[in-house]
Length: 331
Image (cartoon, rainbow, N blue to C red; front, side, top):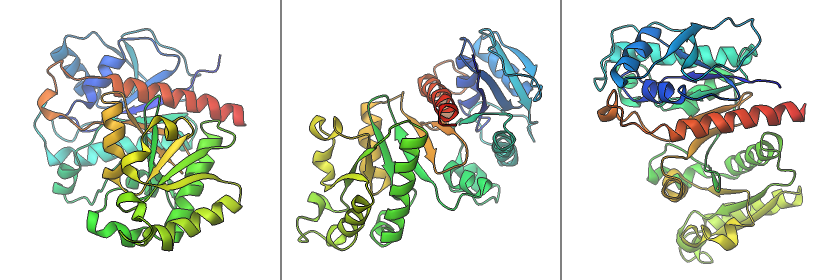
C-alpha cells in the first residue's frame, strides 16, 4: 500500500488549529500526518485539552508510514513568542507564514504528497506589517502559479469561485472574458485530473438576479458570460447556464452537475456552508500540488477549551489523501 505523507500546518497559534490537529491525531489514518508547528505549542495545548500525544520529528528521507493513534510526526518550526490560547500576537505572524513555506517546499521536493492548512488570522498578519490577503493568494505566489481557483466542497456539493476576496462593488468589473475563460479551464482540468471525472459537468451561475433577466437586470450575462460559455462549449466543455443563483441549488441542477461555478464569494459559499456546516473543506485548484483546508476560522474563544470541532480538518485530510491517490493513478 502506498501511504501518502500529508503536511498539516497548524495556522494561528492562538486559535483552534493546534487543537484540531491534536484531536485528529487521536485516530489512525491511511496516511502519515506531519504537523508543521512548534512542538512545545502542541504539547502545551495537548495538556490543556487532556489529550495524550507522542511527537516524533520527521525524517524526510524515510518511507511514509501509518502511525498509531496518539502518535504524530512533526516538522518543528519555533514560535517567535510564547503563544497563549485566544490571545493574538503579531510577533508570531512570521511563524505562521514560515509553516506555510515549509509545507510548500516539502510538497515541491515530494517529501509531502499534499498539504492541509489550518485556519489563520489575516488581521494579525497584517497588523505585523505583512501584506496578506489569504491562503489562496499566498500559495499561488509561493508556487509561481499564474492563477488559482478557490473551491469549497462537501461530499455532495462542490462550489468554485470566479472571484474571491473582493468588495461587492468591484465584482462586475473583475468578471472579464479572460478571467472566466481561465478559471473555467482550471476548474475543468482539475475536476478531470485530480478528481478523476472524465467529462466534468459545470453549472455556471449568473452575476445578476435572475441571471440578468434578458438584460433587464444587467448585461453581464449577455455581454460576457454567454459568449465565453459558447466558446468553451465549442471546445468540448459541458456547461449549463448562466443560471439564476437563487434557483440553481436544487436537486434537478445539482444531480446533473459535478461542480457549481459561482461569480463571487457570498453568492455560492453561504449555500455550501449551510449544507455542510462543520464538514465543508476548501480546495485550491490550479496549484502544482494538492492543497485542502478547513473552511472555518481561528475560533479564538474556543482555543484550548476542548470544544473545537475537528470534522472539517478530518474531511480535509480524507480528501487530500484521495486526491493523492487519484494523481498517482493519473501517472
